[in-house]
Image (spheres, rainbow, N blue to C red):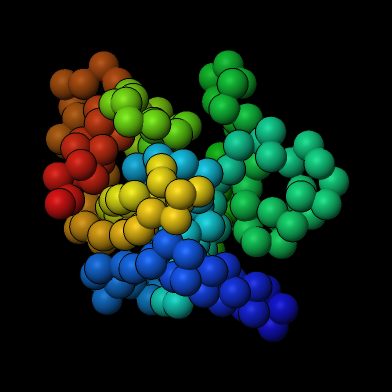
Length: 195
């Protein structure tokens, strides 16, 4: 109950301060495993997306481990289904990916930012993790694009647009040396095609 109230308050604050809106929310399936893939412009992206998507279903998100260094902040993030991810661990953060896979195998929804960090107006190469998760769990990927969140602190308008669902198809990547990275690139291409 308290969680729902806090999420509703976050959504209200974004709406009042930033005119937060979402186009295409009806495309988000209410049940079944699902990966939401979104571009990443600012620290406002995870709470903005989560507050809107939570109108349809519960959502988990992979978040940078650095946010968990402060006790009360760590507790708060865990309450709101943020899975700590060490972005700098050589070979990837196995524990975080296990937790993410558990979420998907329970037919839940997971939000990821394939770029792995805030792009801040740059085009960044995506990380292969989304390809790995989509392949290993069979979860479809629904693309989202967020606009305007880089102006969050200046009270700029934030809009989220929902794209289309796609799945990892190993046959598409039989000739690829890095199929998960190539899948991640194609997901980012889909995201940036949302206008």
